[in-house]
Length: 469
Ligand SMILES: Cc1ncc(COP(=O)(O)O)c(C=O)c1O
Image (tube, rainbow, N blue to C red):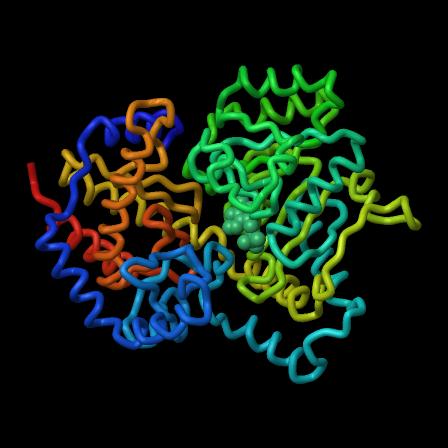
C-alpha cells in the first residue's frame, strides 16, 4: 500500500466513531481468557511481589494479565497452560528463521558445551560475525558490537558527535531509538515531546531537535537554525518510518535527509534494529538504495540470543572508536561481542541467506496482507486495513497512533481508541494469535497456509463480535 493511501485510510478511520465490542460480549471474552490462562495468572500474581508491575516485557498484551510462555517452535508458541499461538510477535522482530531453529541452536549448544559462555576476551567469532555484516550492509565497512539496540544507538550518537565535533542530534517524532536519556522524546506519537521523561533531566534534551515526520520544511529549518549553534552532528532515522513504519515515510523523505546531511556536513544514522536482515539482507539501506554513514543493528543479529547490538559504518567515521587514551571515544560492555552472541550472529546470517528467509517471510506477509484486506473489505464500514513493508506488517483498526495531537480532545481520543484496540487484542490473543501492541505482525520463513487460515479464522471471529451498522 502506498504512503498516501495509508494516510488517507488512517484519516477515514479517525473520522468515524470507534466500534467497540459490546461490554456484555467482552465480559465473556475476558472470562474465557481467565479460564484458559490459570497458570499464567498464578505466575503473574506471585511475580507482582517481586517484579514491579509483575512483568518486564511490554511488547505483547498485558491486559487483563500477561501470559507466561513455555516454548516455541517454528511459527508456533505455547504458554504455560499449553494454549497454542500463531506467533507474529517473533520476539519483537529478531526471529525470521522460525523459533528454535535447530541448525542454529545446535551450533550454539556446541559452543556452550565445548568452550563455555564467555572469557571477556576476543574470539574468532567476532571477526566472522563482522565479516558477515559488512558483506551484506552497503553502508558498513567496520563494526563495533554492543549488547542491545539501545546501547548501539547511544554509541552511534557518541561516534557522530566525536567525528563531527558537533552536538545537536535530530530525532524524528514518533520514532524509537531505545531508552537512553537523550532518546526518550516524542515516543510512539509524534509531538508528545517529554511525555515519558519521568526520571530524565531536562538537560538531557538540550541538544536534541525533535522534527515531525515527513515535515520537509521543519527538517530544513532544523539544519539551518542550528548551524550557528554548533551544527547538527547526526540525524537518527528509522528508515521505514517511526515505530517500524507505524508512521510511514514519504517516498522522498530518506533521500531528502541524506541530501541535507551531505549539504550541512551531518551524519545520517539509519537505525536498522528492525529493518536490518528483515526488510532485506542489506537492510533498508539496500532496499531504498540510500547509504547511511552509520548503521545501528540490534536483536536480529543474534536471532533472539542475548546480548545483541552493533553499530557499523564508514571506516573514517568508525575510527573514532580506536586510538590511544583521550583519542578514542569511550564505549564499554563486559559481555559485548561474547562468543555466543557473535557465533549466533555469524551462523544466523548465513542460515538466513541459505534459506532465503527474508524473501520467504516477505512472500507470506504479502499473502496475509492481501487476505486480511479482503476479509476487512467485507466490513467496509469499519475501515480496518493492513499494509506491509516486506515481513513487517501493520494492521490498523482504531488508528490511535495517527491521532493529530493538535486536534480537540487528542489525548481522550488516543486513550479511547487504544482501549478498544486493546479489547480487540484480548480477543485475538485469547483465540491464539500473538501480535505486537495490537498493531503489528512480524512474519518468519516458516509461516505457512495453516498459519494463514488460522489467522483469518481468528480475525473473522473478532469481526463477528463487532456490531454491524
Ligand atoms: C528501531 C529500534 N531501535 C532501537 C531499539 C532498541 O533495541 P533494544 O530493545 O535491543 O535496546 C528498538 C527496539 O525495539 C527498535 O525497534
